[in-house]
Length: 472
Image (cartoon, rainbow, N blue to C red; front, side, top):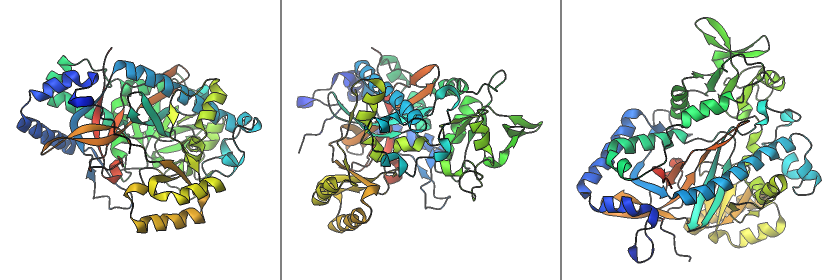
């Protein structure tokens, strides 16, 4: 098996360059003090209320997001290369979304099979011919990256619908500042605190032509029982905008308006954190009590911006993901800078045969799955789990893709016995507006806290780290 790439330690236990200052500081620290700081950081998270709910569990059973005090450090040069690839990919996704809801040139050119769109549950016919204000579909994007070597970064998946986790990125940094202020005077780390201001600026730039003066922005949440409610409230507070639920909104004179003490006030931009199906009960799910009746009519008339646009979920589809190298090249005229993980589409008979023959070595995912649910990690699965998954694959092969098991890079975490390597991924956060693409330096590093585990999702027992991008 390929040797796992350790981001902190190189050959012969030499610190890699980005970790040199941190490593020297760490060596001079009292281990007992560091363990106390780890406990203190956990207490900060508890007092701040940085928790999440796992679907299917009682609302009272909130879980603390585990946080580890050893940062994940990326050099300025590495980050520059990554941002070029991320920007290229995000621009291509936005162009792809415009195309599939208009002329579908990529299908006409034979670069993407028509059934990949036509038979896709995430494709919304209601969006055909609709161009969002400013031409932006994906206002906020999270691109999940994994690393396997010095220059080997892969995109694991794209999150173009409602990516979450940015509040943890901000709180992780704030907590590290509180715990170890001396570290930030010794090491020049690029800041992330500007994100809420950048988000508000970016959303405001997408306001429709009907907006008068400074655009009014609001965050639409499904409510306090949602697993990411902490983040919804946090971002609304940080931006200084209203946090609203569907019951606070109504359509008034062709505009979406929110209830205030002075009556209903028009809104120009809604940062929605509810799924497509619940946005408008008159257009989608008639049982939805979370959305706003008639909002899609206002949207189609160009009088409200919805971030992210309805129908962007098709770009998250893992079967579409397998075509991303072609999508990037088609819309940018350039080869993709960031590599995809090799992917087998199980709706293809030959690919399905290969996957079924090699299940114990592969990772199999649902095309619409997220959060680490509905997947099989062959090397760690039991014979019973593999047999059960085989039946699912044979019954509905089009619901799945498969990938090789990558040897994800590791970063040390604090344990009672000292530092120990654990696998990580990275979700950088990208803002898109008519004014350009803004990528916050760093992002959310998720870490698998169990030894040997490759599953980093918090819902599956993972934790988070502060991510440092160094100044040049």
